[in-house]
Length: 334
Image (cartoon, rainbow, N blue to C red; front, side, top):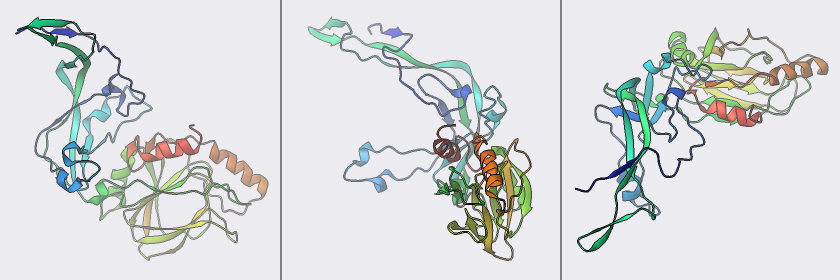
């Protein structure tokens, strides 16, 4: 067997512009190591067959990784490594953790370049084999337990967006859209179980509330309603007696995130309607503004609301969830 040359670095550097993994797991090439112990039932690829893409060329996503406790504001912390979720489809969830590898693993591949030297063997010219190290991986995410069955709430759909950018005489509203997450957490639910689902994502309980008919907005904090019982029709974006606004229905299992400045109230609710109000970690106690102030005061409140930072964590999906990207884009990247 002929010797094989191994190069310590790739011939062509990998071009990675964005890495969604926590800092501890980030590598220049974007590679990470997952260890799965057990059987995962993936979708049947034949069912996904299309004329445009033959079945033998299909790519099957394994699932969605969720680092529920990761805080981008403290990337050096390792507390989050004890709980990592891998959602497979809508009905399976694996719980794992990040482990240090006893010995780092080098990922290698064959170097392909037309300028490599050639060897002569048996009367024929042959391309010399050369290998290169693509990456050194020092950690792995290990899922050693059986997948647990979960309901459709475990993989919530991307949130609905409702845009209420235009202020009224008495309501600031916001360039940030209202977000509605359907089937955001497990049912049946209680205030305690709802907080267990959302508070690890750095949105903290402010209280448990029922039907509230008064038009109002908050100027010092964003707000999340996590509905754990009943249903309600909400009116968003205007004060009493004003035109416009949007009506949105929410029911148990749903979560709605209201940017600071957006007016809201319940028009009608079931008798058992209740929700947990949650607020970004570090926010001041909410203020209630009842959409009756004059123009000058309303514009002052508008300035306060628009000065608030976009949270680093989505209340339903956690770090890297859709709220962060949607709101940063809507606010011009800030």
